Length: 444
Image (cartoon, rainbow, N blue to C red; front, side, top):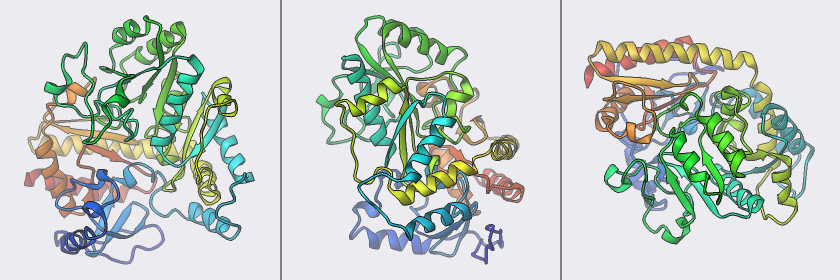
């Protein structure tokens, strides 16, 4: 599969030659002279056969330094819901470039973006902008503590809320380290992590309403933070009544409910998972698909809580609401129409069904679960997972071999099992993807 002229929409061109990645391999070794490990994020490690070096992207396609044309289901690890380099977002950003980059002040485009988010998101009576999901999760935790006068935060195994010391706990623990499911241990996620930073974080197993109710009944929890659907690992939906029950328990015991919608927000629907499931948190955080590749994040929620930012709760950031990124945000949100979501849902459902069929035909035991816009493929499981511990038996090594085989056929999928869809993944792209899935499944 080799580079051809993609045209305006990212047209497909290929031949029968398997993709090779020799130049990426060499560049990674060379770049490690300046970049630690050759990358600027640890989440870009572990890619088989090597982390790739890219030259450009268009639509559903990426083009690497080896000249390979790759159908992309990483999508920047989630942001590119409109595909790579959409014309409307590029034009909006370019127009703002002529007016200025950074003012240390406010702009009308920032206010317009905020107005749109408050109109789209059920919980958003007020909001603020930042630059990353990790930052807004920190802001949400600080607000919960300020609003309640309490200190303890409850999080869940397998849920990711950023890489800072106080929340990087039990993201992917071994079962030996995790301890009993009804009383999980708090397991650090990194070397060098300040163990004392987690003293006020408590970890529970997700989708267990009784566990949440019992913990909140003690009356000392400031906030409960969770992905409303566990999309960082497994694309697991909440059990029937679970979100509603947690919402009721938080209200009863004066605890702030925080939805981390960094992945689900503006991806599973214009109002995020909270609108899809009909459960409104007190605070929600967003990033990724909000600006289709620009570094934008947001925190939104009840006015009385968010207004604490103007009453002594510190929230800052030099690049918060940077005007070029705000122009991209408005352009992205404007493009996220009901018709766009319906189209992605139809195509994503077709892709999910096709992957199930091809894996089954190859005799590979696997489940495909989640949303059409963000789903998960798990080898070795025969029923959908309900929490992190149900995912532990996955055959991760075989799945990595599968993604490596896919890559040789021109399809790039995340080694952790997630598949992100964009509006640029049309029927021709899906046809090519399913051909690659069938070939890769036979090879492994």
